[in-house]
Length: 115
Image (tube, rainbow, N blue to C red; front, side):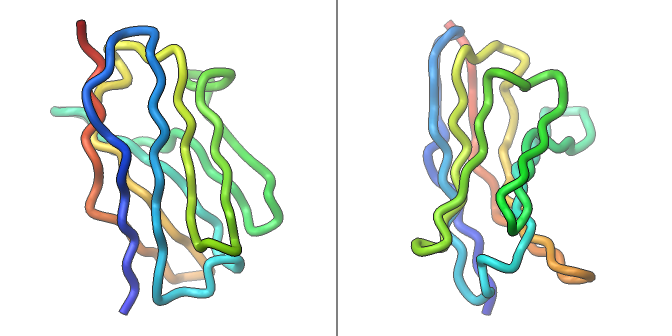
């Protein structure tokens, strides 16, 4: 059974930092392209960071320079370090695993940026 379990979300003030984690089980983690997506109320889910099995990363302009994705294949864990957070970063953040036609999602973790 595949499980992606996110943690690390919460309430943070503008300008603050958070680190999200995604613990994966039931997959050969090192083979998968991993990503973080987010969905704000009334908006479509969007990619915020991705990392290939080889460690190549990709970010949209909205988070480039503020968010850093990384993976620890020995721990089957994906991370998202977020800094200089803005109110518009408020959303539910989802972990995603993709290998060929196989796609898995976590249950999401809420990130709220507010003073």
